[in-house]
Length: 137
Image 1 (cartoon, rainbow, N blue to C red):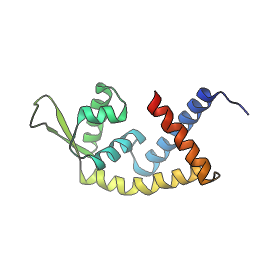
Image 2 (image 1 turned 90 degrees about the vertical axis):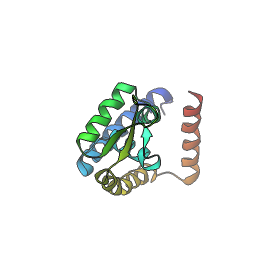
Image 3 (image 1 turned 90 degrees about the horizontal axis):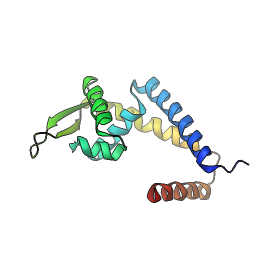
Image 4 (image 1 turned 135 degrees about the vertical axis):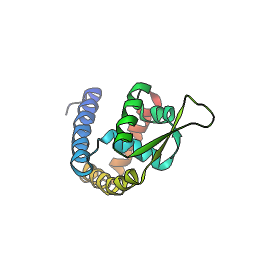
């Protein structure tokens, strides 16, 4: 068995991302990154654009472009921050919320597909390993 963990994780992440992105495009008409942004907004609606940037691990210009596309598609609305005129707050629209209603079961199905051949103990180990990597690096 190949134990080149960095290589295997990189390949798995790349293939999984492409698969999930394609499913999101087909079923929702939006990208997986837009779905991730909407999930974050569902928990923190009205957050600052820079908070969205940090949560998604994207640079400011990438999040600005993402937010502009999402606003153009009616998924979010941006409003100036009341405390800082240079900053923007981001809110889900009704259209964005309705997309999430479809996204939740879709992502649940994909998570179940990923884990179906593994025991709960094995999944717990994978979760602990990945959480360790996220915390460490």
